Structures are given as C-alpha cells and as structure tokens.
Image (cartoon, rainbow, N blue to C red; front, side, top):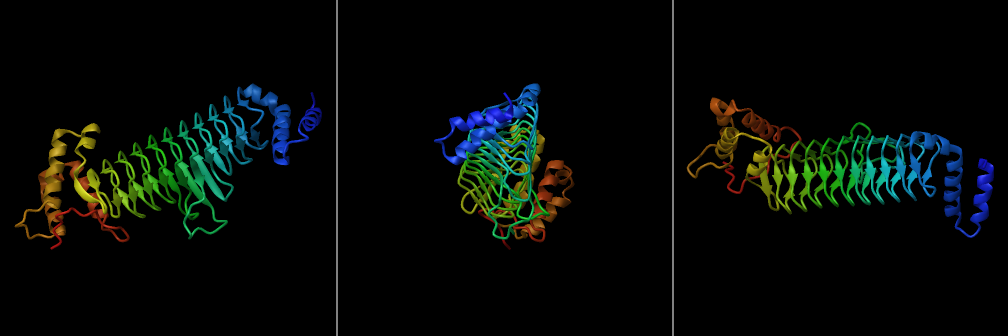
Amino acid sequence: MSAAAAARASRLLLPCLPQTTATRLLHASTLGVSQGAAREASGSFIHPAAVVHPDAVIGQGVSIGPFCTVGPSARVGDACQLHAGSHVVGDTELGEGCIVQTGAIIGADIPGQTVIGENNVIGHYATVGIKCQDLKYKTGDECFLHIGRNNEIREYCSIHRSSKSCDCTVIGDNNLVMGSCHIAHDCKIGNNNIFANNTLFAGHVVVEDCTHTAGAVVVHQFCHIGSYSFLGGGSVVAQDVPRYMMVAGDRAELRGLNLEGLRRNGFSDQEVRSLRKAYQKVFMPTITTESSFEERLAELERENELSATPAVSFMVESIRMSFDQGRRGVCKFRSWNSS
C-alpha cells in the first residue's frame, strides 16, 4: 500500500476522533509506511500509536512503545527502550541501552541540550533536562544537562538544566537517585553516590564521590558535600560537609566520621585510625584547649605522621577549601570552640 493510500484509509477510520488524536494516529500510520522498511532493517520497533518525528535519529534495536513522542532534534541510541507514554523532546541525546519508563519526560523544547550517556534508567514520571526554576534564567538562553553512564534515576525525580549558557548541570556515573529526589540547576554530582528518597539539592550544590544521603535531606544552595560523607535522615545542610564525615540534624552538625562508609569502601584500619586522630584534634578539643580552630588545623598540618597519610591530607584540603572566598564554611560541631 502506498503512503497516500494509507493516509486515506486512516482518515476513513478517524471521523469521530478529536483532531489531535486523528493527527497523531495519521502521522504514525504515514510514518509506518514511509519508514517502516528502514526501521525493520535496523531491528527497531515503533508502536503504531507512537509519534516519532521523521527527523529524529533512531538507533538499531530500539523499542518505542505506544503513546511515546520523539521530537525532531532527538537522538536515541542503539538498544534503547521507551516505555509507553514516555517522551524525548528538544535537543536531546540518549545513549545506548537506556530505559525510559512510563510517563518520564527527557529534555525540553528550549535552547541548549540534554545529553544522557549509556545504560541509564529513567524512572516512571521523572522529568530530566527541563527548564530550571531559577528566576535569574532568561528566556532564550541556552542551558545544559550532561549525565554520565549507568545511573538509575527513579520515579518522580526532577533534574534541571543549568541556569545560564556558561554553566552546566552535571551528573557522573553509577549513581542511584531514589524516588522523588530533586537536583536543581548547575549542580555538579560525581560518581557512585546514593541519594535516598526525597533528597533535595538546591542550585549550584557540588557533591563529590561515594556519598550517601538518608531520606528527606535538604541541601542549601552552593554547599559542597565531600567524598565518602553521610547525611543523616531529615538533615537540613546549610554549610559544607568535609570529606569522610557524617552530619545530622536541623541545622546539620558534624557527628564524627562516616566509619561504616569508610569500611565499605575499603579504607584500611590504619587509615581510619589516622582519620579519627585528625578529626579529634580539629573538632573535639578538650575543655582546657585554648587554641582556635585555625590553630588546631595548622597544628594538624605540621604533624608529619598524620599529614603524611593521604586520606588525612585530603580531609584537611576539604576543610580548607570550605573557607575559600564564596564558600559557606563547614557544618559546626555541637561543642565547637569558637575562641
């Protein structure tokens, strides 16, 4: 059957349907005739009720379910699966082997780009790569989101593009972002992190590697979360969390080292002992100690035995950087010596 004949047949079947429905099904029918051979040759399956723009780039072995939409600037990599009712819009690149589950929306019809790497799972009704909620964003500005490989982004998560063309929201590799989490504009997320349900990151937050948040954690804009740290459930984090540390509370306070996280990530007993000594020296001064926080930190740096341990030097570096210009300082310890 020719494309024209298929279109006529579709119109005969659609007299009582709403115009938008008729248009969608007519487009799907025409697409099936004009591009069916190419799709079949590539091993891809596109459901007749899906709307895939002719200019979209579809890889080999792709499965697109019913009521999906794929926009004209979209690029869908090999072996991707778009479950029923999911959408890929705008200038969006979806890497090989990605799964987009029902109701998820990837990208937006605004200037800029969303790039998602290989083997990511986008959960039900998640919105990834949409416009930010920063009032400073100017309509028409380009904005960007880059996501790495092997991430699992669960149901109802929202991940926004950058707020300006010179920046980019970035998520690395092998992260688990559980249900209803929010990652705002211009955040920088590293690798191998676990964010439990309802973790909320405001704009410009930096999260390093191998961190773990419990549920319902809120992180203030521009905060830095150091590698191997743990944020306790319900915490409101308004200042930086140095590497290897654990915080909890509203406002979050330092509660010691993340000992379980260090153990799980293969830190040796000697490294953990050195970190504990360093932590106690800086954050747990005795009642009789009259030195200031800065003096205690400098004294730790002068101790060759401790400062020679790479983990300790990384911890000190993390603390120092938290007091750089424009940074928020570190979360307080409940018996902080402010002398």
